Image 1 (cartoon, rainbow, N blue to C red):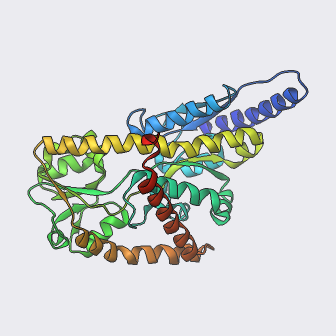
Image 2 (cartoon, helix red, strand yellow; image 1 turned 30 degrees about the horizontal axis):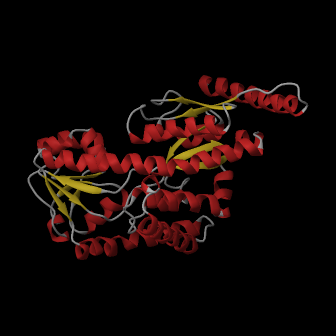
Image 3 (cartoon, one colour; image 1 turned 90 degrees about the horizontal axis):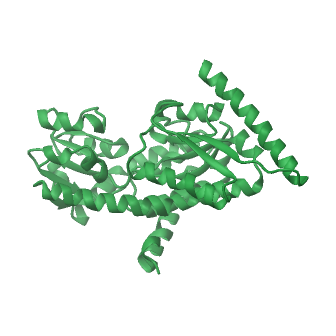
Length: 359
């Protein structure tokens, strides 16, 4: 509580200082640097951390050094489970929110976690980013909690690694002990898996001890956690991703900034999709090679088997629509818009390639 009060005072003074600097600058007297404090629960390593740092660097570059993002890493300001309230209350000016920790509060943003046919990291981020920027209902919902959307990340596609077994079809799921991820895990349960509640960080020991047979996860994370040491097989599901995590800002602080600074933040946030898209695609490709080199069999789930997953996952999409409707969204309209955006950016990728590979 003391920390929150202290931060609240810092922010109020910061708003006054920023406003005063703007006033003086307008009269030709002086200009001052604006420093915004960002809270990040994760450590300063990995693709997502690099993308967050690139956002900060982009803001500084686009503003000619007039705006600085001071990132507080490793949960120094708040843990992941407190990010939503902390940013809204002004403990930080902006920071990362992971939607799965706030299933009701961030329900609209949670559309990016649904088991749609959306495995491409860049396509998913671009679709999510445009949806969040173009939907008045999503923006109004965030505003009710004193939040503004700035930019999005993704964990990338959900795949599954196993010890002592291999998933080549949906029939192979029945009876397996599985650590799952959201609706992707729920769908595996519907195929007969016995779900075990574990974090991805505990999956290594669980696979090694036989507590679980398989763990759903993300390629770069599997390799980073050295889980290739306890996996005999790795099945590429090519199904969907967990994409409801991104940068949000305290609305009062955002509204106190000039339109030019707001545009700088938004443009830099939008650019993150290209940065992380490139980084995470490279990391995922390297991770699959690491798994293969360690002796794991790499299996690509056949298209007809993947469609069985898609079909079985539809009730969880329908549930999201119903829940969205219950809190005032037009769930079906948002879903249709999101699917259209996935198609839009899939077509752009197919026709032009990824941005980092274009001339």
